Amino acid sequence: MTAPRIAYAGMTHLGVCSAIAAASKGFLTIGFSPDRDLIAALACGQLPVVEPALDDLNRRSSKLIRFSADANELASCDVIYVAPDVPTDAAGTSNLAPIDAMLDVVHAHARADAVVVILSQVTPGFTRSRRRPDRQLYYQVETLIFGRAVERATKPERFIIGCADPSLPLPKPIDTYLKAFNCPILAMRYESAELAKIAINCCLVASVSTSNTLAELCENIGADWSEIVPALRLDRRIGPYAYLSPGLGIAGGNLERDLATVVSLGDSHGTDVGVVRAWQANSRHRCEWALRTLHASVLGNVRDPRLALLGLAYKEDTHSTKNSPALALLAALAPYVMTVFDPVVAPQAEWHPRLHRAADALDACRDADALIIMTPWPEFKELKPRDIAATLRGKIVLDPFVCLDRAACREAGLSHHVLGAPALPST
Image (cartoon, rainbow, N blue to C red; front, side, top):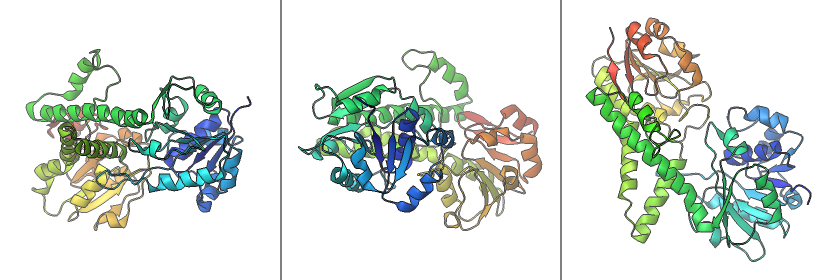
């Protein structure tokens, strides 16, 4: 058969990145959204998401991808992915209404022989409940990661496909499309695929929570977590790719959503989910590391302190601030003057009553009593501790992800606080 035509319905982070990846593999691709303003911007190369290398990949693939607000164009496609992002509330509860709305549009315009694939994250049981006798409906696990979406979309580790009957071969159009990525294809029943994504994220959270707990012990007993990690990576039961870096709790929305789903399912079916609730509690506790450290080192010692904060995105290489520890910290520091800088995210006045936007990282440090680096953007790692020391009024630096060289901070007279190791006192 000729190469199948592919469509992605829903031009948010998931749909945009996935559609551009499809075009980069040589497939004629349509990126659909009913939002005409969004489509007009996409057609001009203005992407609504920030991802390393995505703009370049879009330019190189532009001859094979068309962005459209006309749902009738879906009729020309052999495989149609339903791919809007799933909004979640503060508790991690998913709102699946946008998925149903987009699925209705796709069903109304797709050919009868088209393969429809739900790519958005849904709760177990969702796909089977949306089956129709006149449609070929599948579910595919999405595994994009903010900040690494191009890599994950173009070089996937594997495809996990949920099927009504996994013993049957996949339809030729989707089989041809998936095989172009040269990775394993794992077919399983709908519910297994829907739970597989949650299972992956739960294993990641377990690793992160363990690292956070032990890293906090290191901070208090004189050990250094960074010295322990190499020993763990050499253990075959843990391995070189394990998530072992301590962090400021879980953020971004996706992991929180999956934990909330497991708790809800467990409570509904009488399954013990106490360990999952413990992970949630650990995340909330670790998110407050910066606030606790500031209270101990600055807020109780300096009258009306001025604070500098670098980084607002929940992690580097993304524009997303969903459940960002930096925004939570800003809310907790409402009484104090805050000067902030992020290379991608523009600060909003409603985030803090005494907020000032700096021109750059060093400008944020000017006359501040403490510096807090909440997002490890690459450019922050280029900062020289001696320049920071010359710009700050105080000597306290909270650097949870160790952007700055610790020895250089000591030499510059800075009191350097990091995750996983005791603070280096200023000299």
